Amino acid sequence: MSEIPASAPDCLFCRIVAREIPATAVKDGDRVLAFQDVNPQAPTHVLVIPRAHHRDVGALAAADPATLADLVSMAAAVAADAGEDSYRLVFNTGERSGQSVFHVHGHVLAGRPLSWPSG
Image (cartoon, rainbow, N blue to C red; front, side, top):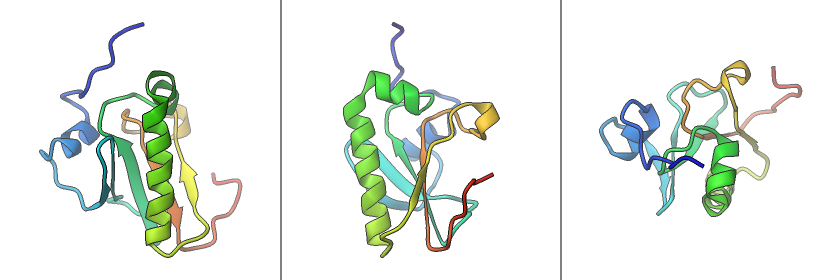
C-alpha cells in the first residue's frame, strides 16, 4: 500500500486547509473542516473535508475510518446548526460521477426539497 500524502500541492482543498485560499468556514475540527460551497445548489450547501489529502471517500474509508466518522458527524452538526433536520450528504467518487476536486468532500445539502434521482 502506498503512503497517503498529508497534502497535495496542486489540490484546491489542501490549499484551503493550509489557508492559502480563503473559504468561509462553518465548522473547524482537528481532522475535518466544513466551509460554504462557492456555487451553492441549495440554501444550505456546505462542503465537509478531511484535513489530510485522500482522493475519494473510498480511499478515506480504507485509510482512516475514524476521520470518515468525524466527517459524517460534522456533516450532521452542520445541518443541525443550520436548523435542518432533513439533509442530504453526497460524496461523488470519480470523474463520471461529477467529482471535480480529487480530495474527498461531502456535500451537505438542505433547505429545500431534494428530489430523487438527483441527476
